[in-house]
Length: 96
Image (cartoon, rainbow, N blue to C red):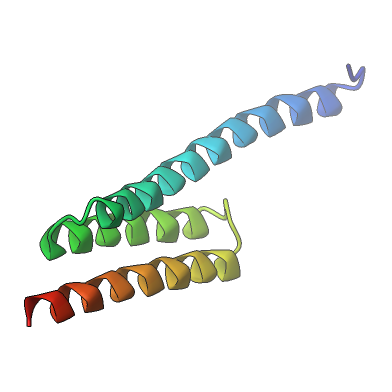
C-alpha cells in the first residue's frame, strides 16, 4: 500500500478505470458472442444483421473510449464480418 498521497490516489483511479474498462470489454465481447450464437442457431438474416450492427457499435465505442486499440477493434470487426458474410452466402445458396 502506498504512503504518498498522490500514489494513493493513483491506486484509486487505476482501480476505477480498470473496472470501467472491464465492463466495456465484457459488453462488446458479449455482443460478439450473440452474433456467433445466432449464426450457430441459423437465425434469419435480419436478426443476424441487427446483432452484427449492435456488436459493431459496441466495438466502436470501446475503441473510442480507448479500452482497446483501434487496430484491435478493426481486427475484431473484420473477423466478425467475415463470419457473418460467410453465413449470409450460405443462406443465399440454400434459398436458390
